[in-house]
Image 1: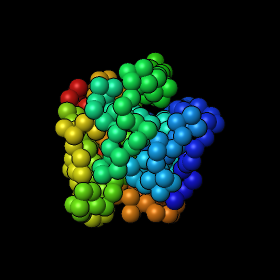
Image 2: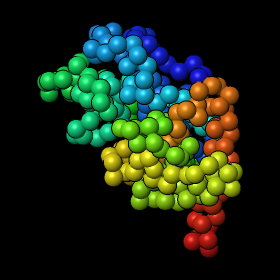
Image 3: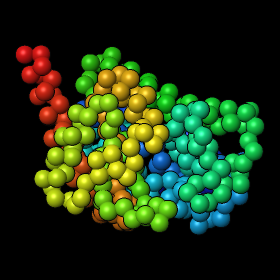
Image 4: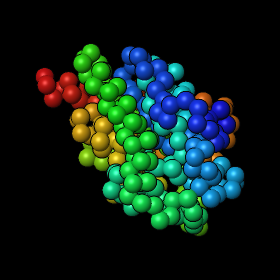
Length: 264
């Protein structure tokens, strides 16, 4: 897998923006890019195997995101912190914002948190991540740059003993424009069975970032979920980035053409 941010360290900002001045038509987000846990939180009571597992991050998602950023000249924003510290793709009122259990794994360091501790984690990671996205989108709007927003995730082949047959899924909510175009193009690429709002859907509470920054601004947006056994090498990440590049460009062209016909 291509050099994701890993391990326990306090180095650098908890929010990373790469290619922030990119002029392409997309902004790429990666909510679960990292498995880092800051030193002051110890290991959250988990062993190294748990901190390397999918419960801590989305393996392969950052590699795909970085390759898309390069190919599309797209700004990329991601939190350099494990979702076990706080899940940036959840509303601050969500029950799983700071999970005490993930799938079947208990997270001892997240049990019995005070409101002050919860607020501190929001201020440390969640708030600056969303502020960075808002600043970027504000700046692009001020420059008159048309923008579509795509977030990149990965998912496990089996969840709670249920096999997931889709190598990739595209999630969308109110605005289906981008997702429909991406699904159509991925179908033409014959990548396998496609998940349309699978393996998750916005009704599962997983669409927070895109609802807040895409839908709220009426920007075309979609969430990508790639099965993580498809992302075990850097070459595999590059392959999926190439497939998504084609699908995203095709979908964006459809959106632009539709907008043009509506204003004709």
